Image 1 (cartoon, one colour):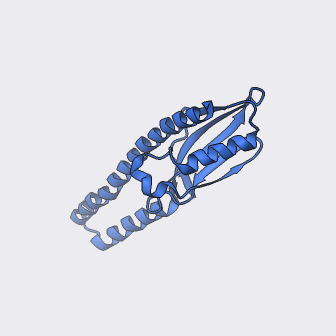
Image 2: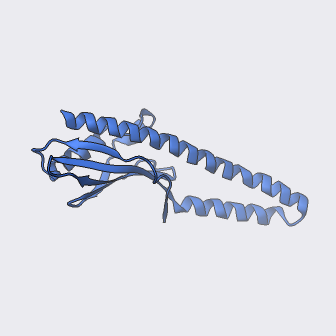
Image 3: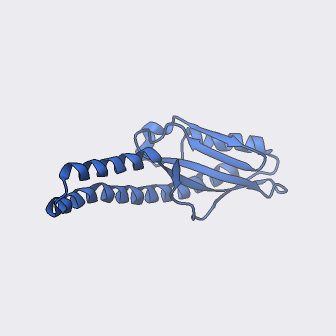
Length: 166
């Protein structure tokens, strides 16, 4: 189970030179994404672990394999080939998913705290105050993922366009 956090973004586009077949274009796109250039430099140590992906005649789906090993967010690129007459144009979106185990862990933590603190009203207020901490942290993580993914979108768009213009 995963949540799609950001699905309403503008699509990113990349043009492919007309002599290229779809397969060669995808190979170059994969190489470009695997080698470097996508994730901001703060994630450099985990960047080179690569991606896995599936490619059909029209659709491309790429996902990082080991990026964000200890974080709940995993970036994924979903795209589609259009306009094959003049070469190929890849249009798609960059998404993050939130792993379900993080939500389950937060829920268990909240239930455990409520049970431990007890039933009287003053303790309940304390529990609510304590429970607000993980949810505030969760909101901060959502905002961080938004900023990171926006950076990815601009970054990947520029890099793909410059790579395929050469």
